[in-house]
Amino acid sequence: MKQPGRILRMGLLVVGVLLWVLFVNLVGEMEHSPIRSVISRIQAAKPSLHADEAVQWSLAKESAAGAAYSDNQDKFHGPALALVARGVFAVRGLSFDDATELDLRLVPFLFYLLICAVPFALRGVSMLTKASVAALLVLSSAGCYFGHYFIQETLLVAGFIWGALLWMESADAPGHWWQLAMAGAGFGLALACKVTAVAYLLIFFLTLLVLARRTLTMRRIAWVAAGAAFVWIGLQSWLFTDLKGLEAWGHQFWRSFGVASGNDDTLPLTNPEYWWAIGLWLAFLVGVRFYDAKLFAVRDVPLALAVLCFLFHLALPYKTPWLLFLPVCISLSWVLPLLAEGSAGRLVVSLSFATLFVWISVCVLERHTRTSFNGNSLAMQLGGYRDAWQRANPGKRFYVAISGGHYWPLPYYLRAHSVGYGDFTGAEEAPVRFLPAYDDSLPVVPGRQVYPLQIRNGEHYWVLVEGVEKDGRSAFPFGLH
Image (cartoon, rainbow, N blue to C red; front, side, top):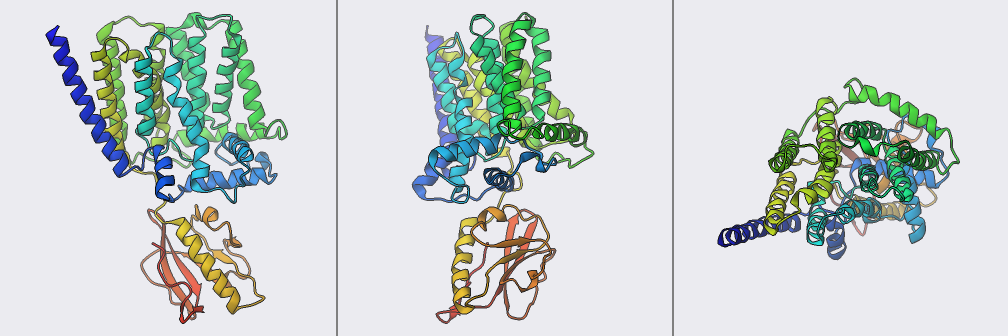
């Protein structure tokens, strides 16, 4: 009895140290965890939106204004996030123009909480194991910084994981048809987020063929297909009001082959350390699984699913860390509690390695074209300048001109102003102009003050401001960094 007790004490010490290091990292830097939303409210911090978040805000705002999703078939994301955001904002009585960064990120954070709740739906797992894994997920955001970003990924992952989970958990409860319908609803939500969900569904089907063929009955497939079709078509067609949205989905599906093959808008691998971390973590889980027994079983489906989804993205030339959110969440929310169940020592050791993995992920995961300026500060400065400019120019219209370049997420932060993008009549006379900066040569324009502005890494602007005096000083007296 002394040896297990010593192992338990050492394990508790190890997990305590690792959790403390993780806690210090999360509280000190706090850039990767959804808990930042809570702390941000306490500290009155105002995080800048990622460029893709601003794009999603714009699409959701357009939909709330009555724009049809099918108007632009090149939109690379489905309408699920916009519709869900509209529903959440309607309940809160909030408009998209009034929504802060935290208001927007609350929407996907609610779905991330669904991912954190996955362990509680597992049968044969103790409450201690479920609560421990859920707490790790909430604290760490699965080692990712985008688990609460206003993007489609969290909704897709939550829908897909719950769809697969309900499918597996309903296998031993044939009378619970509602679980199958809800599984289909989860898959439908995933399909209405991104066409990538089709590949995930095919991988899941192949996994079932090998490991859980007995669950593939016609009755079960029919219930899931009905639930998936109803939710997917409903979301994709804007609650059955825009059936041409299905054509847009088909266009996106066809386009995805070009992106996945590296022939269109491909993102090359830029963060190999993160891929290595996840690959080694999955290899560790596989090793633990085969240490127990070498026979395949139905409960190996989530582990096989996580590994195959990782290998699927590893094989394709299109690389972005966001693609790995699914295998990471499957491994932590579903596989980990299954493998950790058993003795107290087994749980402690499992949590120690899982904590080490998410901590390493936080350390090695580079941000994806992070927005690098304080957008709210920029908006406040422009607001003060606008008031001074209008007092100095009564009767004239104040507007902002943004020329060329990739301007996201400026539309979100400049939403209170009249803004024109690209070349248009009167752009050169705008009181405030944003010009792409291709080098360090400071433009000299008579009557204009010039300030540098870095939007994201590699994306710089010169901001040209018409000179206006306020109380003997410039109305726009400081830089925009």
